[in-house]
Image 1 (cartoon, helix red, strand yellow):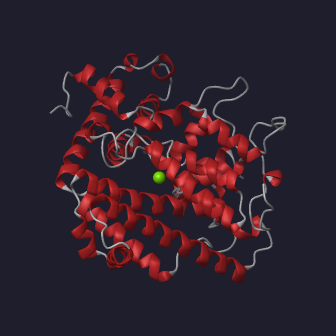
Image 2: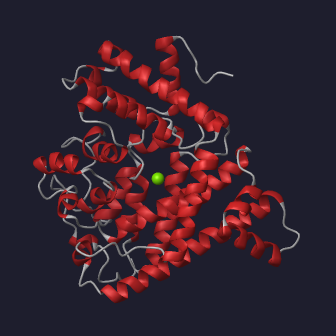
Image 3: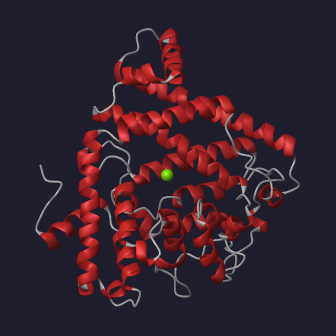
Length: 379
Ligand code: MG
């Protein structure tokens, strides 16, 4: 690894794992985390989990797997430029969506609704549960036994109530910062913004591909998009259709990455933290410039209105909520319908939530069809 900036997370100075292990001979601690994540069952399931479009709507839309790979690519490339820990950002990026239910946010909302009286359901907390407890592959411990730094990056948000609960078991764990009002490592902050950068760009692509968004709408509503569109045409007047869209999106990602790297480098120069720990006690240092932040917010608002709340997307969302809610009721009423390692757990509701959260879109759909006799997504 090229030399790290003094505020980067040094794998040799990791706060370590909950269960002590002998160091790996050929890999540093964060490379080892990344490898464990890639080999996990939850990671393989990401290929059949979706965010906006359900799998059967087409083969070319993003899934959570390709989204996670795009986030990892963007975050690694920025980390390299900034002299930060590339392996750590890769590990966090590949794990950041492991706790998502089938069918994206619709699935999560339905599960949260059913879990209201039992501690609720939140995908960030679930991602941490997956790597801390639910993966069952190692002889000596449950979960993947990842380092503190990777777990800290995975736990992106956490309510005060949940942080207090988590800190009861692990007072200096990744939830402690939410009680102290501290930031995570720079690498964690970077993945967080790389996530937003990736989905904003690829949801435009998927939105246009689906026919639910027209590029004219984007040009009309978003000055940033219009500017890049004009720039692309000025350089390549013959460009049209999807190739023009790709060229604009390439410019959009480039502009966002350049701005983020530049603004962050400047913020670090001014704050001059002594080391990676000092970063945690400062305000967030990974950021876009105010001008670009405002344009990104406008893009996010646009996508919310024009795409995520498009009637066709909402219809699928409604089906997804029903599938998850009806599965929950069926398993709660008869736990024997679940595999034994879930069906025999004493914490029944949490076991049902863990089981459903682990499902892929199509498994949930088939299981729902098997248990209720209806296929909501047919036709
Ligand atoms: Mg994401």
